[in-house]
Image (cartoon, rainbow, N blue to C red):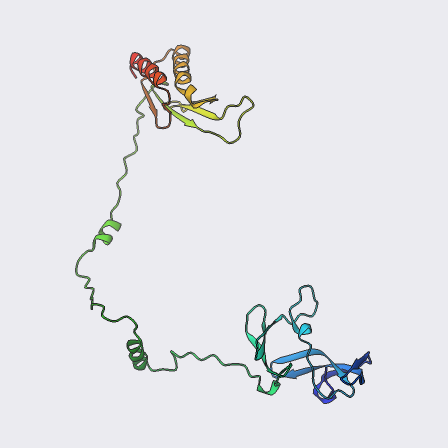
Length: 267
């Protein structure tokens, strides 16, 4: 609010309520306007008849979510001064020095600070001189790199890995000649029967897959023996090679039985 109408632009005559001064004196709000000083503008400034000073309510300038007219400012109060800055960019907008119990703002002194690029304002030779003078680390050996040979890192990075050629003819011409075995689990969600392991058997020739659900890992060796015997009898074929990387061997006597069975079958 202000008591000088000449400071207001876009002034609108609109009487409002009374404002109480010191000494219980009152002044009536005669209208509203806007104060513009350079790039800084303050809206909704009240013109109070009889007011001797210009007053700013800091709470009306602060960022308030949901407000339609939001200046987006935040305030930081120190012992000797107060700073108003943008909430999004943290750029200082105005600064008020403290006198007594009040913070005084002089709009005539508020000028935007120009950013100066110090590198472009200095000659190239002078920049290197100051760079040499301000070195903090001293006593380092003068190491010079001469690229006259192939370093080990470049040599290793240029190595190419040769892959195996794709075979045109398959290694096996009948089903069950090679089987792959894999075990998956334990699975967090159990089946209705309480089984949480999955035993997968894949035929190399036909890519046919058999899946068995297992409750315990110790049941896998015996289940594998039963499954292999059933497939050989059902199809009238002999299993030649069995490959596995993830089938457990947890119980000694089961390992013994599996080894005997595979040995008798020639696997």
